[in-house]
Image (cartoon, rainbow, N blue to C red):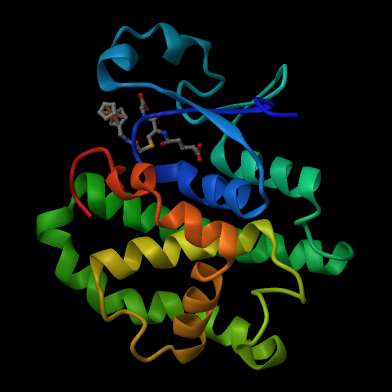
Length: 211
Ligand code: 6SG
């Protein structure tokens, strides 16, 4: 059903890149409804958003806000939420861990980039170590973050790693499982095509030009 999905968001990777990678990798079409700063500043759209923020997502006539809720909705639609209740719970745990680090990253980028970057980079190995450990515990890091099938949490973790590889290009040097995981996921054919597309390459990571 082409045109089923619409992402309504600012022209950035930001909080929508994981869902875009999920959709691209799953062979889904979607529409981008791009909201510029100018449009946003009129305030009309903001008033109509449940929490006054973007992204907003449309699945046909169904409207949803909150990026992690959107990811989970897509996971249920496309069988990306684990094979059983325990895998689903572990995926929730991983996704919450991704969200915790993403919030720290967002605070750095938007509130404290110049003063905070050195300390952030120094603390980064401690933040990434848990994900390396989780991967190592799942079939020696050869599969996905949980189980034997890709999940919504993999796309969110992959985006988290992508943005940190830009912030701190050596951040995976002591994490072989994570480094291999990024290479393996990046090489998935649909995802590779998306990641190499012009539209993706010209989209900034964040809304203030910092990365
Ligand atoms: C910002 O924080 O792009 N949404 C953001 N900002 C506008 O009025 N928990 C939810 C979730 O996971 C967090 C949502 C998120 O979905 S994303 C939002 O709506 C507001 O609060 C990061 C991003 N920022 C760029 C930005 C948007 C408005 C001001 C800065 C684009 C750039 C400059 C103007 C428009 Fe701009």
